[in-house]
Image (cartoon, rainbow, N blue to C red):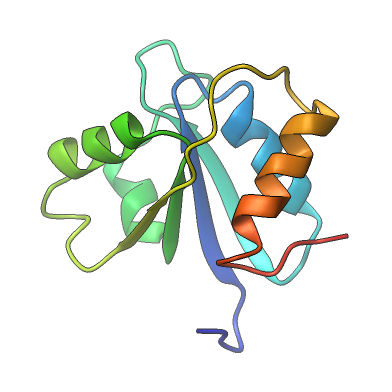
Length: 115
């Protein structure tokens, strides 16, 4: 699954201030990947767009409802895209060590995790 160019990774949660934002910060300086984070809600820091879906090689959502929203709203654009639900609850603060540990533990199965 690795290629010569950085893989484009999109992290998605509800408001893009806690979980997906933390994931983006963890990976931002890791040159193996290009990363973005987005939210699905109207009040999101940065709301997901069709362009984000088209840009991404792989999409990680924090909850099944995020995956469902993306599949419903961007039905044609997600065709053939890999979307992985991480099942990480909305109980953390941004950059909280427990959140970072959970993200790394769950992402390790799919992509290389920075130390």
